[in-house]
Image 1: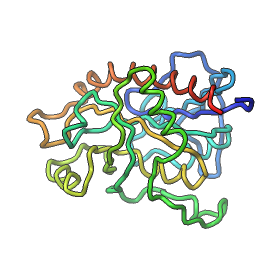
Image 2: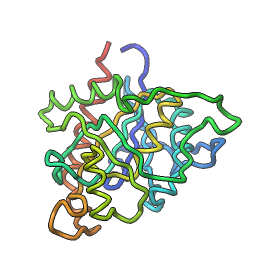
Image 3: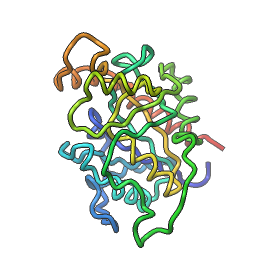
Image 4: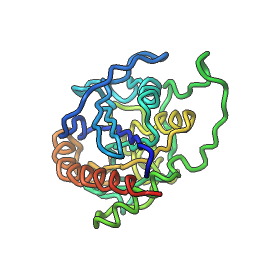
Length: 251
């Protein structure tokens, strides 16, 4: 592709740093500062932006992340596409710990978050279509890239987005399952909706770090989550590299 493509990678729990040497951009926004400086990896023709969602070091709980500033900063830095990595709990059988998934649906169980740009003077009121929160060229390229390198990525799945930072109760997970959720997370909303309002092509990689409460027999610990995420995140990094190659040769 002749024109430069800019892919933004939003890192979640388990992906707070890049191995690549990166320059940094400090971007202020009408909504305050993003979680961290935007790291820039210049490659040809795909330019990579990296933003750790929870800050660097990891310090912002899910309900305190400045999602509006994060997405605005990535747009200001030139992002065309946004790939969001998030750690989630598995609810249904196909989403066991260690699984990678490309979700296609969301249900919002959070509250009180700044979830739109349309309530400020900086953007006009818009009612964006959100029928398929992740649908777009980036998600299709992600799935094609996974197939090409033999990476097992579940195609689809609904994330129920909870408030956090505490983990969910067994009853909450059961409610989410009855409502049609396959995974439980804390950060995909309002992030996906804000990206849609800004016209950004947004896709996700959900990394299953544990069974949701009541699904398995064991209590959930942060140490176990960190250990479970270690190996899948190496697959995420390989998949991102394959995706960048796919984007670079796209028509």
